Length: 94
Image (cartoon, rainbow, N blue to C red; front, side, top):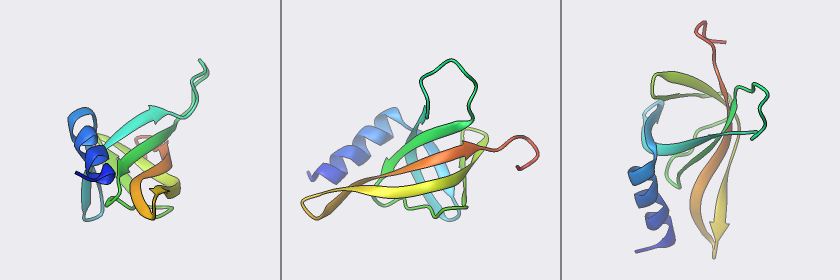
């Protein structure tokens, strides 16, 4: 099993289902800041095959998020996983 496949298996076990356009995957969301102050930004970890673009919308567990930044983590020339910074939209699509 490759390292990218191991990450994908862990995300299926511990992540939540998400979609972005036609792409679907299990992702892990964590608050961007660990502080007590309110913040609507999150860190996303996703399988290497899930590659949203900046400005696209991700739906996860009934919430919608806008992609602010997205990139991958590489090791040995292989993409291990995708990370992104997301901003949760309010109920009005903003």
